[in-house]
Length: 60
Image 1 (cartoon, rainbow, N blue to C red):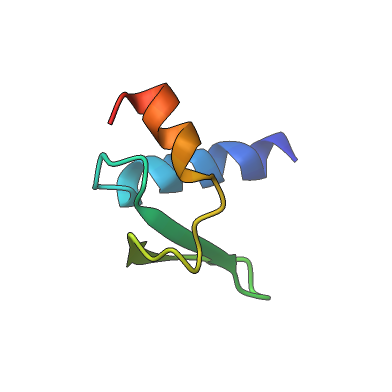
Image 2 (cartoon, helix red, strand yellow):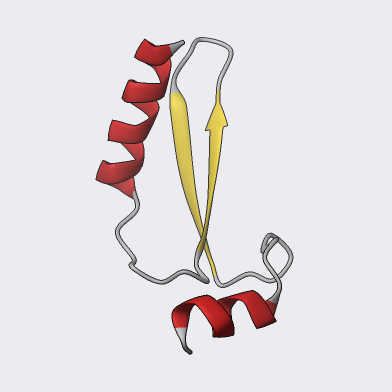
């Protein structure tokens, strides 16, 4: 499990290129074990944190 977690976090570091807490990335793991990353932008359909949280934590 730790090996997968380390691989996944390294993958996230390489693929998350926009430093914006409201941007959404979707990570999927295929049956073969490969991980895929899709940048969804600021799509509210996928956002799960409420707007008040962003304002309080990130002082937007």
